[in-house]
Amino acid sequence: MHLSVVLPCRDQEGHIEAALEQYFPPLSSLGKPFELVVVPNACTDATPQIVRNVAARHPEVRVVDNPRGGWGLSVLVGLRAARGDVLCYANSARTDPAVIPPLLELYAANAPCLAKVRRENRGAPLRQVGSLLYNLEGRLLFGVRARDINGTPKMFPRALFEVVPLGEEGDLLDLELMARVSRMECPVVELPVAGFPRHGGKSTTTIASAWRMYAGALSLRRRMMQRDRTGLEIVA
Image (cartoon, rainbow, N blue to C red):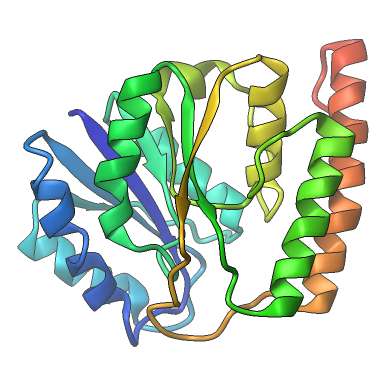
């Protein structure tokens, strides 16, 4: 298996089938074996059954449930189940599948590396400012120089995933990954994209959730520093 694309999804019954179908033309154009690892994330609607129906039609689709919930845990569950030599994960609600082939090309030209998209337009001034502040916090606290920490898809070799100790089960997983990769001095390359509207549904990002991420970054830094001193992972 060459490429595994992990797609967490939560309560997306209105658009998840159409969103998944959009992945097959660009991924098939690669001419290499691929799989979609779809992770229903503590869903309360018909999303899990819909993705299983898609999997029944497409052998490239595998479904791995995460009943506990959490963005980070869903990504980790999918990555651990993935079979590809190259691993990728994306936000199933607001990713344009057409970016994966050029991202894979960028990855191959710079491998081993972490390749990711950089959204140039977040679609709303408040979200744009919030993203800038979060990226600045990531640079000050962790030395992350990427301009869009949470931008997905993210793509990297299986060997990198196997040596990077990831443990964040919520929204801080992207920051943890970028921070640990930066400490390893692993190259990070970014593919600029204009941005992509949601396939459907509403964003769950609010001022309160954004504030939790800003505060959570400080807590993550303390945990990582404690681990560096003791060699033990400290759970908050």
